[in-house]
Image (cartoon, rainbow, N blue to C red):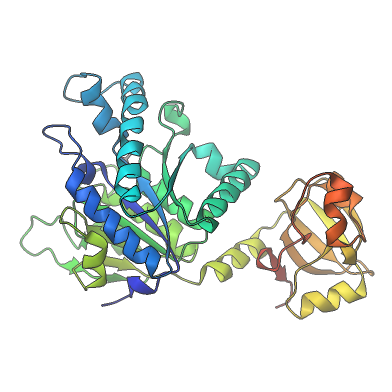
Length: 372
Ligand code: GLU
């Protein structure tokens, strides 16, 4: 086995429509789903957080609505998704409840994953579900997403989700077992078990959008891989149609792994350090500067001034008394609230602001020391 899926701490599993729904009858593959529920329960028992990104709303809904075969107009797909999503969520709820697992549904749009405030809110909800032991069930909010602001495919959505929750593993289950050097039908097509770097050659194997030779949606899977490995998750493409597909991967079944370029924390820090623009600065005292150098978080108590115009989650510079930038990070409070808690102890935050915010002005996972 190239990468051990069993050692994943937090795993996002994306399930394609063709696995969940029998494309001929339009019916749910209930037994297959029940078996996947067991797979998920095994991973959870082993200490892995699991997040599901499930397609299938449109495939299920079109039958429920009695829509014709063939391609659907946008509003028909959206109507189909409206009906199908209820059935899909119910099926997942049933399959997971049989394993004593609670599931919570989150429907996301492109904006929810790209706009910082919405992103932070969605992330906080996801973390809370995980903390309580639930399995988040995610799909695109197809009924309101219009074509310009739509993912349209759950491969990239799942990759963004995996970056959002700092997952260390992303599993794409579909009807293909991995990446081939050429379309799998061709006689000299070679199977690629491991991709350490997504080179132009690898991208070419997936086909280009213009020629569309890479069947099975390989192009969006490679796009997903770029997002995932850059955010610190190993990604695997595996065939999912046989029962217990996660167990099969763990047992060494053929699949294609894309290796992460860093751990999720390092990837996140790299991204913070690389964000050139900051929206403000936070001046800290010497004690806080020493604490930061030791790897601690920045607490409001060590802050002496804030400037600029930043919102919660924005990138800010952290400067010392002589104005030198010593760190950069994502601030947990907007400017107005940050100002009110300058120099105050964290246990006073709730009394001052009227809500229980984070103890840290900048958590150490969101902080990078400059010059390191
Ligand atoms: N969100 C779509 C659905 O639930 C699926 C998109 C995809 O196939 O990746 O039907």
